[in-house]
Length: 255
Image (cartoon, rainbow, N blue to C red; front, side, top):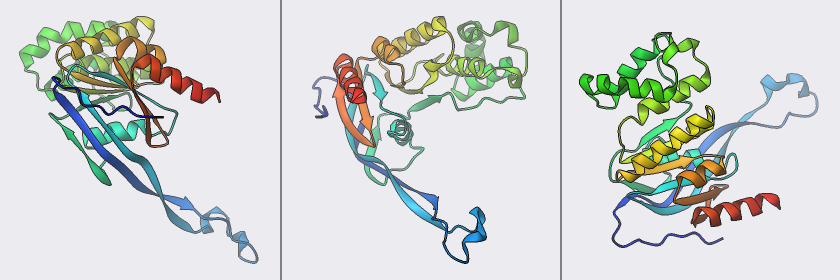
């Protein structure tokens, strides 16, 4: 399928991904030997390295006010692409250019579990560059957005994974970002939290931000994004209107 890589005149480019390839090596266990030495078991199996070509020549340009959904089956390279955009995963060849440092929000990023939710709000705000006065002014907004007010003084280790993810999302999005990457964070919480999260993403986008949303929820993608990129087996399959790309993706999965 053709991928859309057209330049949009009059719009400010924010992220340019240029022929991006990412390869990495993993250890693979060799086949068990046969014959007299075959009783060595798993510990005796030889190790070898295998090269995984995670991204294969991805190219696109993201613009100011874009909200881009990233879809694809498990293992397609979505998270690798996001980590490459943030600089956490180096490119094997090709390049990524960004107008400012992207912020990555993922459900796997942990807060400090021995500390209370309140302390994490303060430390998280400071890490975002907010002043103590700004954190104090936004404190109630963060706590109420996450829906954890009755637990805010308890240690984070007592929180469920959903509560932790909601608090992290609330902290990370309390200020506007020029480039924000949201990796599956909307998969947690109830319907009301998802609505609040989607509205917050739209607000960031409308305030001249650019948002990448990695999600398996086509409803969240439709409700939040003005553009969708579909990646499969490390290749860019399609880039364009959400309804068209999602329809093509679903048709491919039905085959």
